Image (cartoon, rainbow, N blue to C red; front, side, top):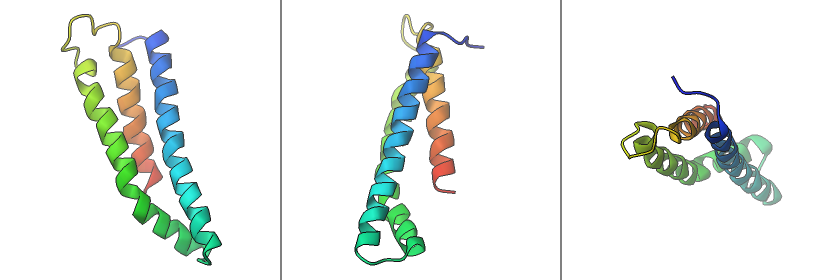
Length: 100
């Protein structure tokens, strides 16, 4: 029951930045492995295995940090709660989709 407001839009930008960071980590390491002579499929599998932990840690940190704001536990959090909801939803969705 949140509205689309400036905080929601800021949350979209934050989530997109974090998702892009995870994608860049995977692509960069995949390219490094390809330069070392691995095939495309092997490089993708290895990059996903090696970079899974840092991406999950970044996502989990942001999600856990946004939970109090999304639950409106702090005074004045009602205005900023939509940002937290957008970030949490975006990170959960993108992280699951990234490694499925």
